[in-house]
Image (cartoon, helix red, strand yellow):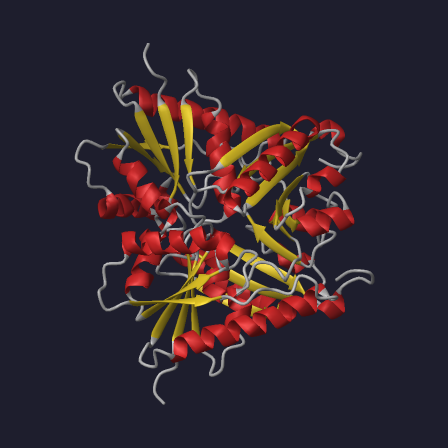
Length: 259
Length: 259
């Protein structure tokens, strides 16, 4: 065998083709093969979006595009972590099959929503491939950045830390210790409803970067029911929704000895 | 007066022109005026880099470029926060003067290192301008993303939160509560030296996106002196350095009841 295959994880941002970086466009045009996952009927328009993005930036006629069906995670698995591990094994097998159809493809690119480093499984799935490919990562605009840009707000207060966490963790552990700003991702359940809203402000965004983007912001007490309603309505209309939000605690609501 | 002026804060990434997004390139070419700050002699090459980036992507002959000198922060100010506030006032006055020279410029763009939302002052400075301009934010690749891409690692563990914090906070408050991953920015003092290194791994990067990029990774106990030396050497050579690092705590080193 010659050189090991190179797998390029290309962050594409959150759906706006304008999120693509010059580096990403160069990587896509330098690939022999680009893999596009299909995620079941509901998210069909996300595969469409990936196709539309490629149609806009791909100029190399030699680059092949291959679509493949992603296995579905067993959401009923008794152990969340094991369920995720098994799902990643299954996805790695699917990638391997999709790549094996093109034995001559030395550079294979995968379009990754957002950034391959942030709440994305591609690096962990890639580590399961045998023989191990060389991995290259092209960073992309994340939903967190699309959120703060849409609202025109900074992520952090001056010199202050912030946490990025998940809806599950917010429900299980409450307000995170040691910070006054929390960004919440992977939250299918509007977990902000589990917090005491006193002194909290929320900046929420859904489907940021897409034509159907939504934003809402204000005191959590007032905005929570409006966000729950807007989210349910958008989800019903499209069959899916991707949302993210930033919570900030007012100085007056901070525990003594902080800030 | 007619329409309010629009100020576009354009995230340009960390120096690699390949970090520019299509959205950023469009915004720059749609601007009547682009402001480039000069930050004193030592960082002259950063102004050069901004000029080189514009030379690469600017195709609109009507777009004007204006350079201006940034005031220097009084690092000896007895109150850090007030010192920053006064510095931001002074920068806002400088922006206003630079813009007033071009009264016909309806769309003014500012090139922002990284992303305007992450440890950047541009939004706070822009809020001081009178009359208040319309603000648009174009997200850009951050040093955090350049770091994880260069090392090929995920920011977060599966379903786990992480904190983004500063060197000052790490020195003053130690390991942040409730997380096993911390990204440290704005650290001129290798503050990781103030932590007990047992069970900690570090992924460090300096000047990521530039030709002189450096990366080091490994157990903190072993890497700390090597990073201190590499950082000092690079800083002496260029007169400045921009670095960022990620610290992760091994499962065995986590306090009981976590992870």
